[in-house]
Image 1 (cartoon, rainbow, N blue to C red):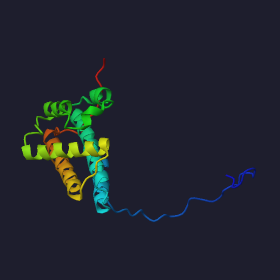
Image 2 (image 1 turned 45 degrees about the vertical axis):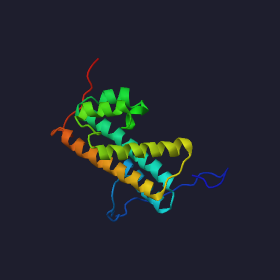
Image 3 (image 1 turned 135 degrees about the vertical axis):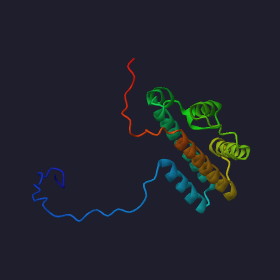
Image 4 (image 1 turned 30 degrees about the vertical axis):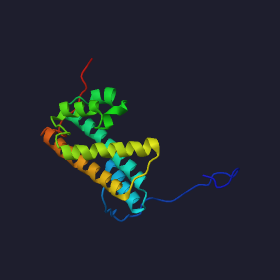
Amino acid sequence: MSNKKGEKPCEITGTLDAILPPMKCQGLILHHHEVLIKMAQRAIDRNENALAVILAHAASEVFTERAFKLIFSFKQIDYIYDNVLDPVWEYNNLKSKKARDLYKVTTGDDITKDKMFWSKFRNHVDRRNRIAHRGETATCAEAQESCQTVKELIEHIDAVLEMVKPTDWGNRTCSKPSH
């Protein structure tokens, strides 16, 4: 290792026989969607409401992708996800009919059944699209509603994932079918 251009590397000597104290760690490990929701809430605190709506929506998309990945893994068809769905962006937003239909057929859950929730989710997606594509803004109340709606979506889908998860999931060995 050298400090300046043209100098010869210096030799580092020593031992690693030191007794190191045990590591002390404290805190939470968050999924990407949880980090995005926290960032959205902080954006609201800074009165960056449009950004909060976009971050909340990003959380819903990241979570939806994760949910589909898990669903396909539960059914032991993750190779289909990897080769068909993963490259296609339209399956990360449940406002898309294709995504909703796939979600319903793989989970048995009709996400639109709760009309009040579904209306709030559609309003959130429309708000996000107006912000992202037309440069519109959002009020603090709208940003809070978007964050809350996305949290409800995540909680609902998380509960569905728990119901459709096979009891032996996580204890299986995976093998791809031969073609």
